[in-house]
Length: 238
Image (cartoon, rainbow, N blue to C red):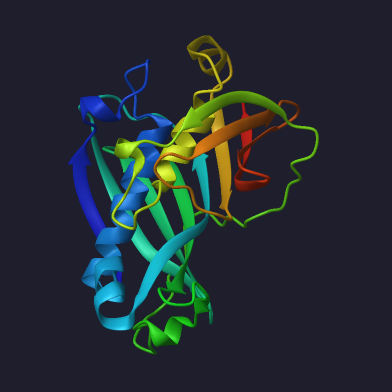
């Protein structure tokens, strides 16, 4: 199944250049993923109610090919690109009004048991043989990167507006924390063209997080809670 939507870039989704922001790309992807899962009747609310489980994002990768201006129409296509025993990959493709691909995102999700916190097989949370895989226009693989020799760039506290329905900080909030380590001038001079995020832990209201960073050929940004990293990100700029 492919979910196809049409909309316009809203003012709240734009960056200082009045184009669809990086957060906007992730927001569109998150909404498309949840809506697609809802159409397939395996969304997070259903997983809680019927399977005593919750879906969590474990990885996400964004590649930007072009900009979409404020109030410009765009289209979104969302579909499952890979089904495994423990995870689903859902791809989201965002095109401008000329149908040119401007951004694509791949999100890996898994289901956690609410009692044990352990990963559930996808077959136990409603994913059966009727679910099919679709091929993306752009193939993107998840990669590995290290988080050695990072320096603290910022420190933030998780507050009410960051909390989602599962009781922990929403995935987009971590992206916002990491992007805030850059200045407007830095990102205008060298815009971000790719972000890959790995989520390995959770944070909750009141937690103090350390945002650490190392710049180089690619930038590594990671978020530490207590003694370990809960989010890691590789950022490639022009």
